[in-house]
Length: 160
Image (tube, rainbow, N blue to C red):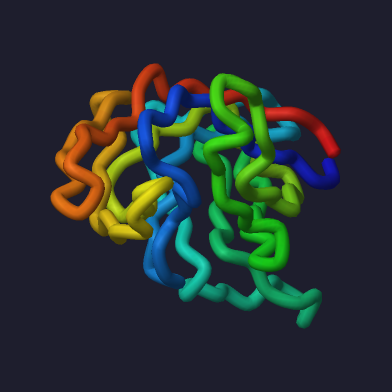
């Protein structure tokens, strides 16, 4: 199946360097089986810190799961070296923030939740534990004395 990139697009107001925080950051995805096309009903998350051995000693993945419909064992791996921040200059443009190595599991939807961080453009103030589940986030930068926000968060998947 190959690599699939998750691209983010948002409107940043007075913040930059929007990024997922830590190896325990949860990428909430809906997956599709590459074999039979079955789509997971529930949101599932994968994390960098999770590593599951593949059958037959073929390496490891962030998630291994058997399809409920066709029983095929599929996996998906977060490629840690591809995780990038979304910056002020990326404003309102799609930018790849992570790539996944897909072996039978294809991500088809993404739900940003808690665990993002960003910084004030002028002040460098760090805002941690930003939750983007509502696709909007606002706060106030005391140092710069201005409101900050992330708005209209959208995403798309592209094959690499």
